[in-house]
Image (cartoon, one colour):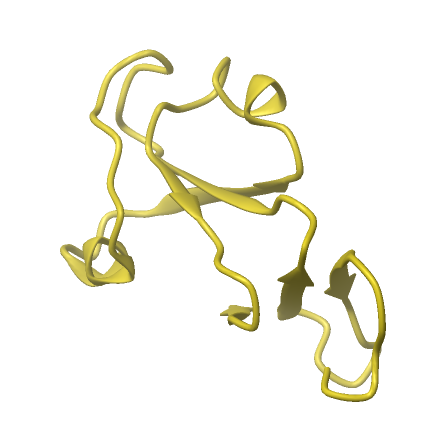
Length: 90
C-alpha cells in the first residue's frame, strides 16, 4: 500500500486462496457489515471495534461496501475501515 498514490478502496481475491478476501483503503470509504445468520435484517446495534467479530461462533454473513446504503437493508452492524487498515476475511 505504501507504493500506491491517491484515494482508493481495494478488494483482492486470489485463486490460490479461494475462500479468503483482502481489502484496504485510503481516502475512499470502505465499510464492513456483519450479519449473524440468525438475526433479523434490521436488528442489532452499530459497533466500532473488530473485537465484536470474534464475540461468538455464530455463522456470519459479511458485506464490504463503499456506501452504507448498500448494507443497511442487510444489517446495521457496520465497522468503518480506517485509512491504512487491512481487512482479511476467511
